[in-house]
Length: 125
Picture 1: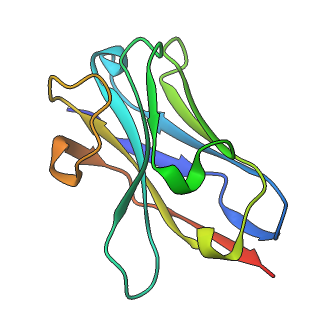
Picture 2: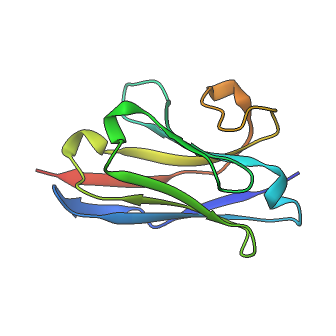
């Protein structure tokens, strides 16, 4: 089992940047593929990015490609989401999640077993 705690959210102007962190408990962090999802008010939770167990493979939803970068540091049991060129439509609660599935970079909601509590990101226009 793993516990996940996100941090780094906040209020930023359009065009700005934020870096989200996801700190994981336990000694088996490197055995999980990690993902970031987001949920805007009144909308379903959607996939944003995923990274493989080693960090060698990544996958992004089209709307964030070229702007967001997912990474991980297995020595620090932490995953990151660097968000640049933020847009008002990026406003949402962002969640990190850990997957025990076999896929290298899973993108489905139900591929993930463990979830953090979320961190709010608000982008003003």
